Length: 120
Image 1 (spheres, rainbow, N blue to C red):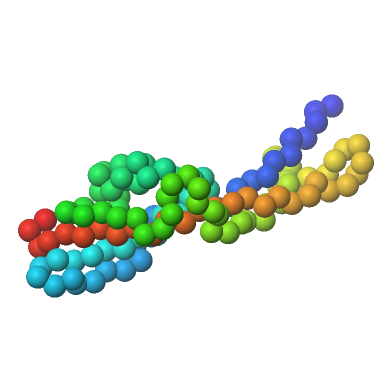
Image 2 (cartoon, rainbow, N blue to C red):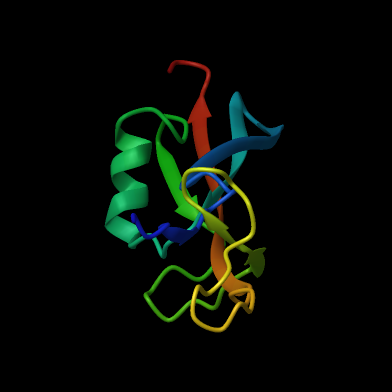
């Protein structure tokens, strides 16, 4: 007899990058804003790498408008139910017959901007 494996399946992607806006700053400068959402905290240097690789804009200036120092608090929590890994059915403890409880899984949001002039 094989024991069913029960998991808490994350429904949110581990990382998303959304373009949230843009504006002209005058004198041929423009700004583009991004929202980065992650199921884990992202260190500042990793956001700088994403910018350097072109995922968070390009140009003369890059900044982060939200806490990004390792002390940031979750932007929210997703409720994850326990499910049978093979069937997707709710997870049930084989000894007690009770359903496993839901858990709260945090996610983090970082607001970033990139600024460049028309020469880039």
